[in-house]
Picture 1: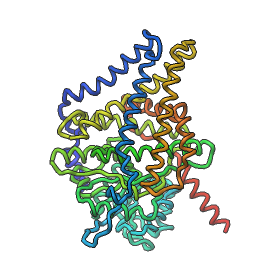
Picture 2 (picture 1 turned 180 degrees about the vertical axis):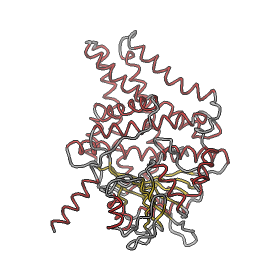
Picture 3 (picture 1 turned 45 degrees about the vertical axis):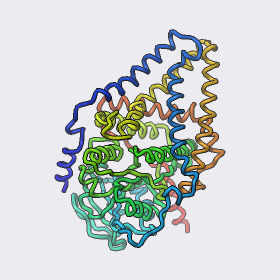
Picture 4 (picture 1 turned 30 degrees about the vertical axis):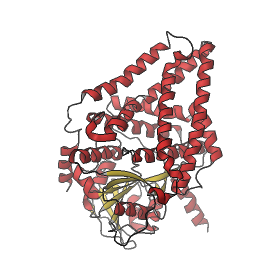
Length: 494
């Protein structure tokens, strides 16, 4: 089966068989860089606010995107049943079988959280496969002692657990997350598969929500759930959780907007579901990509357009989970470096789709936007550096109008952030993880703190991409891991 995946990947991946790059794609990608050079040069020749043209371009671009997202997502103000978000159950629906893959490498500290949540689902998945990616910590002992699994030997799948009949252990040599997912994909036979990171806690109805979505939409091949980040209780953890909570909310509202424009490309590998047959058809997850989930959606959509299949990708507001997120600056920069380097990889591999009418709105809208996103962090960091330069140089005829532009942008961001929180609450039903007051404060302080950190991570991603590096780096679990330790400590004290 793995050989069949490799053959399918060779047929469908533009990384392996690069097609010619259309002129329109070259023009779009070069234009965003040339525009930056021109705007940056203006800082040395012009006076007044136009000397800060790099920042003005950044503000205009970001504002246009906010308006687009707000306009597309406004339908969430209507009752859920009026926009098809809630469909009455029908006895005629053929419910797909659902399997869950938990890819884990040295995750013994948090794996019980994920597994306990899976066992507590209101609609239990038919299979749960722990794709053990060469763990060297206490994972083997944990699976044997706590979950009654017998070591199957490397490259094999265990018999079902004595305690949990739908749980199995797939033991693998360390080869990375994508290879572990592919091995599990080949070992399973369910209609749909859900990928859940070993540091992700599903809400009880998550599996049912995903299964219902695939039952009701035959063309659905990939679906994203909603994630809430948890980063730990240290001051650093609280700081990053504060900003990332509202970043995640805005991002999921944005995904909903692009979904309505039939251009959604991003699902979270920490919690996503796929129609198994479709994923096998295009060759599974690509081990050469730093963001295998993001690249897979490109490949699914590319194949669908070329074959006229009409496949769809959606975000499911009723499928929710909590996931461990970086709680320190170092771990945050590592994560964003990998994400952005993987984004650049994918944008380069699929460059033939940018501006290409063959791919509909995806080619004409989303991918040109992504072309600008490749240099957006450069625009942002340059704009901030120029502002500091003007300030230290005493060029207040530039600084004062620039500050007025920044204040105006903050006001726009405030409105959008609050609107996003309101929409998210109506959509997800989650009113506990967000606060309008904290969202307001985040919008005020984000441009001068968290946003710059995001851009720094992206700049490191550019360096990672240009140097051809492929390592993720080791992430420390500071959120759910701390929760698990507290639970075990409390249990021992009773």
